[in-house]
Amino acid sequence: MSDKKVVLELKNVDKSFGPIDVLHEISLKVREGEVLCLLGDNGAGKSTLIKTLAGVHNATRGEILVDGEPVIFSGPRDAQDRGIATVHQFGGTYPLMSVGRNFFMGQEPTKGFGPFKVYDRKKANKIAVEEVQKMGITRIDDGDRLVGGLSGGERQSLAIARAVYFGARVLILDEPTAALGVKQAAHVLRIVNEAKKRGLAVIFITHQVMHAMTVGDHFAVLIRGAIAADFRKGEKTREEITDLMAGGQNMADLEQEIEGYMEAHDGHPPKVEPAE
Amino acid sequence: MDSVATLLRRPAAASILSLIGVLAFYVIFGGVDLGQLFGAASWVNYAARIGIVAVALGLLMISGEIDISIGAMIPAGAMTTAIISGYFELPIILGIIGALTVGVLVGLFNGILAVRTSVPTLIITLGTLVAMQGIVLAGSKLLTGAASVPLQAPQWAKTVFGDLMFGGNHQVVIIWWIIIAAVFWFIMHQTKYGNWIFAIGGDKVSARNAGIPVDRITILLFVGTATAASFVGMCHAILFNSAQVSGGMNDIFNIVVSVVVGGVLLTGGFGSIVGVFVGTITFAIVVKGIDFTDIDRNWANLIIGVMLLVAVGMNVTFRKKALTAVKKKKG
Image (cartoon, rainbow over all chains, first blue to last red; front, side, top):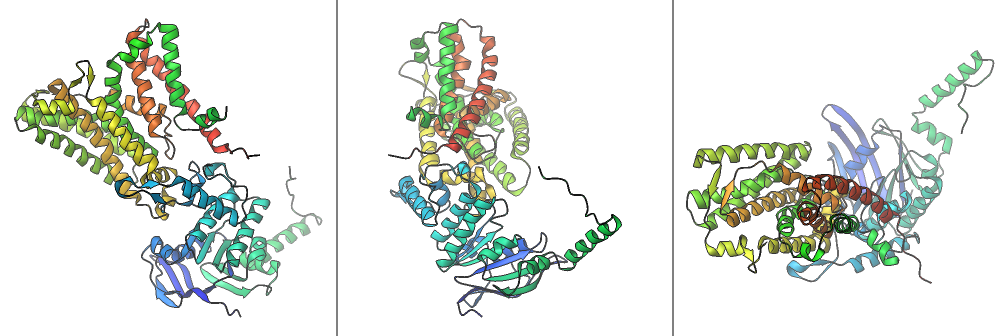
């Protein structure tokens, strides 16, 4: 096992909404300088787990520990103050605002004093461009550019760079590659690696096994609100992981279904519409 | 060429082009004397009346909400002042405070409903619009027995809020318009609060996650529009020495058109105070400037309609331009 320091830990966390149990006895350890990949199909409880970690929900039972101390977040802001930053699919960016303004949203640098505190556009733009470039996105060189003109990957990168700049220690990335093309996704994965190198703990949520295998050190598969598997890099093959995610049984069922079809149709597999 | 391109990417671009277009149209087809038009008070007075509310509404619309109760708030402000200081003959200062208080209360009501319920603010403020019309008419009848109340304000109040300047026909409210627009410009484009308002209009959930007090700002913006409207009504009551109950339906559309021509995106997140300011001037010139042309004034609404469509069309184009704009590499 790893000897790296545990930043965030869940101990037997349950979360239910009224009578519905969404998370069941979740125990996880997130270490600094490591990427934890949280895998799971839609509806497996990934979003609820992230929201619990980000302070949106409180756990019904169980404990959340930050640096070994049990905490109860009073809200998303509280979790952020403790260094837990969440970046959602579109990165919480505002398309019709500039790179600089996006980067400093809610924490604007100002100059002047009293009622004449003025937003310091030059400083904001300069720091934003520097930080984004440090993360390897060299295409952004003008802080006045509107974010809506950037690609999805660049927007993600901007959001990650912002979280890193504002002192995040745990970075929760909610399906950052889901809506991206191959090249864009590679961009984001590189930035995930960069964040890891800087000693951040990264929780990477995805259902794309390939992306997870590329950056992950530690994997947890979530099925119907419970951890179905928890293993480290190299302990399982891609096929095994995909199988796990689909609930194992389901995948076998699907295979059988196709085989059954083939038997009844002179060995032809089911018709597949030709690709364009 | 580069500076032209930069200008076109600004939210105010369409309103400036609209203004130039309208002026050119009036000169070419209406034979207007520009010197005479710029010297005239009628359109400036009108612009100030709708402009004070338009800048406040501009901020609110950038945050992605709308307030149409402003239509009822202008007569409500006027009637409050006239009833308190005219009919009951209390000091004018109480009338002024009363009018502004009514604005703040209605704004709070709108704002709190907007953040507590998921009802669209168009519907909420439609409700307060009609309700306020009822309150103002019934209240006026109940208290004074009439729908029109005379008011004689002392000279200091007239000088500050409702007088003609420089011995001419320009109303003092024009100065208020410029001051209010300047203050709002500062807030919107120079402070972090402006940043927050843009963010609320751009993506409310992300703004909340970024720690921006979305609800408080939304409520404040509603207080801003309602109070701006009651302020205008109060100034008019003092200027014209009387106040009448009226629906104020025209004002709603005129103010919203000014804001939209000014380049504010209806869904929020984009716009500028300079744009709204120029949009208001353009609108006022179309409506009042037509008297200086050979064109029959009944055509004014047609021009407004065309201008609105053209301006919004330009806004869409320019916004796309702004999104794809990349600064040219040096060297």
